Image (tube, rainbow, N blue to C red; front, side, top):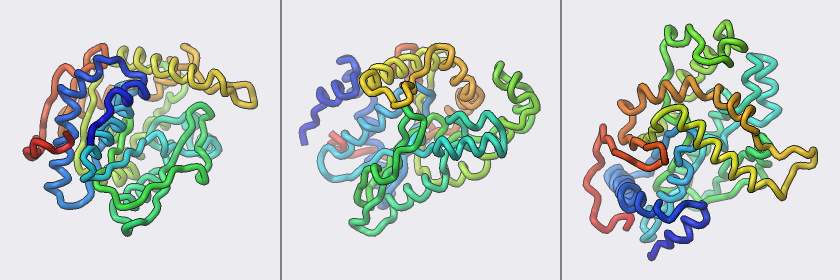
Length: 311
């Protein structure tokens, strides 16, 4: 099958030079994933971890396109973001556990059980079984009505599960002791919020991440780059909702001050990933300031793919 990469680049609003990244890195990764699937002899789950704005969602969509290119394999991508608890559920958490849990993002604000059910249904469901893919609307900060979720047929060969903390490991109790930013200092002085988040990583999220067969990490150069990249994402969201403002007059788009605060929720685990994930993931791609891959690190090299796989 002839892949229309040009259409993909336009639909994702990517620059023409992104094709060079596809040729240099992502086609090989797609081939490696196909080799992993062939070697496993059963459906596999590929985790794609990366800080906000690192391009993991775009990569998951691209890998699906490449993997399915010759019609041999079926792939689906699932985003951790689409597993967020509803706005009402997070408000209950904020009342029952800690006020900071009203804000989506950290472990504890996702429906882990839904993620496990979805992955298990996609990989082990009876042939022809319809599986609903969860969906979350960031512009309204709420879950899309289940009646509107897209339906796919199970089983699939490869699940591309992407998210900013997919595969993350919990921190030590000692690491949690001192606040790392103003949010933690001023609004989590006793460490209860970050302790709860860490407990979620060590418990329910571990069960979810145990579904991963292989883990890919897109490593940003630093947190300043994450802020810049996330700002670009927010600009795109602003354009997307410009003609579809909510009935209450709000757009769901954050201004600079709101975005700066929002990222403070993510900083602790993002910094922890910087320190640990390259040694934990099967493959790490080191990104430069322009979101381009500078180097690849393999901790567990994939089996040799056939030359025409994912071509």
